[in-house]
Length: 340
Image 1 (cartoon, rainbow, N blue to C red):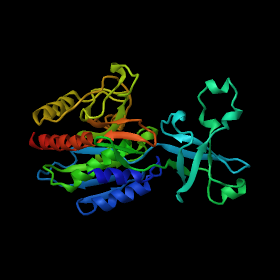
Image 2 (cartoon, rainbow, N blue to C red):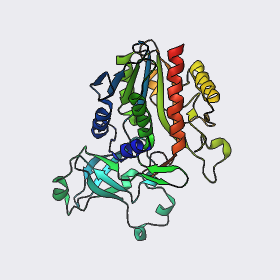
Image 3 (cartoon, rainbow, N blue to C red):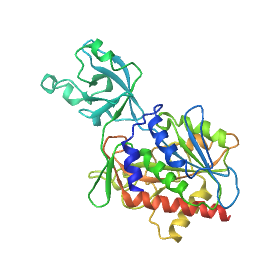
Image 4 (cartoon, rainbow, N blue to C red):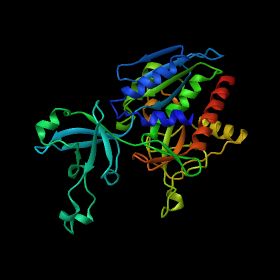
């Protein structure tokens, strides 16, 4: 599964531009799926029959999109002005490499030269309005030959194993969840399962809302990446989660309070099968659960997350054992529902 995560993270899929990710997933799902469809928003909905015919009782979901940028102006000098797509800290983007548009045009994010920065300006964090993307154009007309307003830009990054079982890449949130779902689709399942690879999660869980209305599940399991702040200078109670301590079972975040019975089921399964697990010690973040649980008559939701350092940056970091355990626990969850 590690190679799946690495390959998925190399693909560009800024919210509303998930095409390359979806194409990759379709090719990998096709030999194992009983049906594959893409809805009007671009969600990929994959149905696989299991040993028990339970229809759409269970939906598993992970989002395909990643944070990035959208081009909203071109200066007379040929520089690209942009706005963030999703939650990005402007402090982490200065000097970073990006790919712009469908041509994957290389660019670099720049800022006013340091020797021109006043003492007062030096105290302030630059805003996105202060930044630009340099694509090497000589002027506006030159830039307009290869870039259009509304083009998306994604971080450029590699997928690198390092340290003791760690992986660094962009878009780990949530290509790790996509990889886990791919592995489950490849395997024999004890019950029917619908897998939703959703779009536009990073800009307000928009894709999952429509997909849940279409699928109408009783239960949804969201497979996600969640923030880890196990870093120097961070108080213990604000670290949220830590790498290497297993998947995160959330009871609440900023978007949802999770079904108590499903939370306890995941916890008990982890204990029974000696799978390390943790929960958030700080309420933060959100995911597709907030949209899914409010559709139609309501849906029971649970979430299983891999802790991620430096979320929404080109150098996110995860522990490979954590997502391996997430896959194992998700498999036991499906087995438990099939037996109930």
